[in-house]
Amino acid sequence: MSFSSTTKNELSRLPIQNRCCAIAELAAIVRMSGTIQITGMKRISLKFGTENAAIARRIFTLLKILYNTDVEVMVRKNKQLKKNNNYLIIVNSMEITTKILEDVGFLTDEDSSYYTIDYKTPENLIENRCCRRAYIRGAFLGGGSISNPEKAYHLEFVTNSIEHGKDLSEIINSFNLDSKIVVRKENYVVYIKEGGQIVDILNIMEAHQALLKLENIRVFKDVRNNINRLVNCETANLSKTIDASLRQVENIEYIDSKIGIDKLPKNLREIARLRLQYREASLKELGTMLKPPVGKSGVNHRFRRIDEIAEDLKRKENET
Image 1 (cartoon, helix red, strand yellow):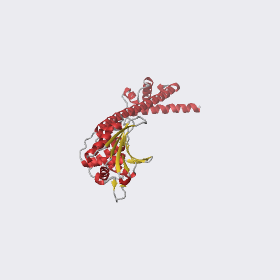
Image 2 (cartoon, rainbow, N blue to C red):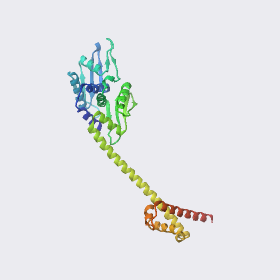
Image 3 (cartoon, rainbow, N blue to C red):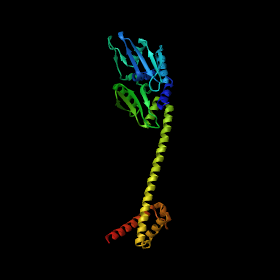
Image 4 (cartoon, rainbow, N blue to C red):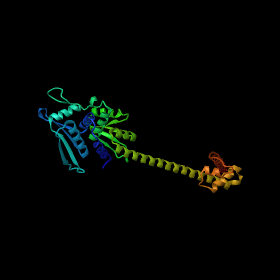
């Protein structure tokens, strides 16, 4: 089961504590995945489709608690792809359907001749903080998804209305998050890509088990990345040490072949002999072998003097 499905299953099992939050959650589900069927004589019905059995149970429970009505549930076998079950929840009662759509602010009857559909989120549904949390949860159940955090950090909500997309983004951002909107084909995608903010929104929706799993993955990835950085840093430092040692040995041997190491000043002669003897040692390690010991910068200064002497000898050789 995917991380997204696991998260939705957890959210679908949360207790429904009060009516205002239940309506807010249902309002988001209606806008994200509801289908309204309008026939002659202004007869309407409401349908919800999902491949997730837990979400189907959640919608059924919300409708039962809020409206105590008979709801038709159909299960169909998809013939394409993985052949998962498709669950269809249908409210056939015109009276109840109208009541639901009016309660969630999706349908307004401006006159006796036609209905007006409003995708915007009514402010009275999200006045309370708890209702905003429930609305985000409903939007995720109705049309949200989250990537496997082991591969990437990405959480998104897909809606077919720009008005609803903007409202949903504003509701999410009211919790000090930074969601953005992008157009994908004919849909509008509200998304969050930063790992810490995805943790926050899981907490807002009360998906605490998914939150803990994501945090464990984040900690593991951070430790692994830190180890990789340290290894890369050590490898780079080792390469620099080896390259510097090879250059120093080459210059010392060149000086020895031309004038002899004994012609060098005492401090340079000491470090030159140590380098020939301990070719893989770092500057700090060579400094501790000197008597008295010398710091890394002091050792580096001596090798620069040796390099200058070698370059001077090479230049004089080229001139002759």
